[in-house]
Length: 312
Ligand code: ATP
Image (cartoon, rainbow, N blue to C red; front, side, top):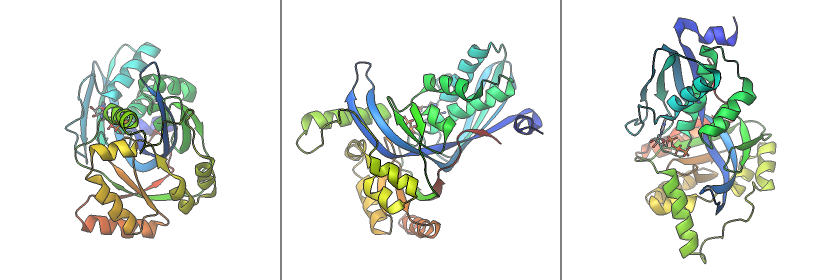
């Protein structure tokens, strides 16, 4: 039985796609098209979105999950449904599809959950419709859907430049153990970028100016290649962190608690407000998870790198 016939069981295709962390995120100046030039090291982690696709006359979606999904549109604004429509147009598919999504990645949390759903929809519909677009074909569609969608397809550890969507795989040794702390409410990615621009304009003395050519520091690449959590903690960087913390000052106390409780470092994930704490071993992650949970926070132990969107 091939991968795609296994995933077909019960007339539905099941795909799983991972959330991501930014291990390094340098944000340059805003470009004439309104986007910022960025350079990021991404890592896919073991917090997944599950998506099932089945034949239907129209394009419909139902979203549930273990996270608050009230902010997720269940119509054509949903990125997964847009992905399905885009693929249908590309391959000339005349019917529709029904998508069932079970979300585990916090919504508007800076972990690319919507992008993971879109990547999952591309893989699922490609299999369901026998389109066989291949990795390059799916990647091309992914980059039209959003900056983080190509990485959700690729998975692993990668460097992204441009808007973050020009990807090249990065070597990473072993596994990195993280404790994720989701925050209530979510943050809008465009709002976090605007706050960063505002802070840079107004408080240029306190904040480093935008790098002329954003890049991932060689020390971060070294740390990944060596599987060295200590070194990664020392060199990880997120230019959006100052903006996310300015919008959500309550996160500072959680960052401090995590760092005082054994984490090598705590960092805002992407545009936040999810926090990610890096530990040295699975046991250390478990201990930190228990400490953070005892303080009343939701804390999840995940690891990376893991594979991108794939048929189950
Ligand atoms: P980003 O990729 O911008 O860092 P994020 O991880 O912070 O995003 P997402 O959970 O991907 O946040 O969603 C951001 C917004 O996109 C949501 O507030 C929601 O309105 C919209 N959205 C569209 N489709 C989806 C989807 N399938 N899942 C979640 N949000 C979606």
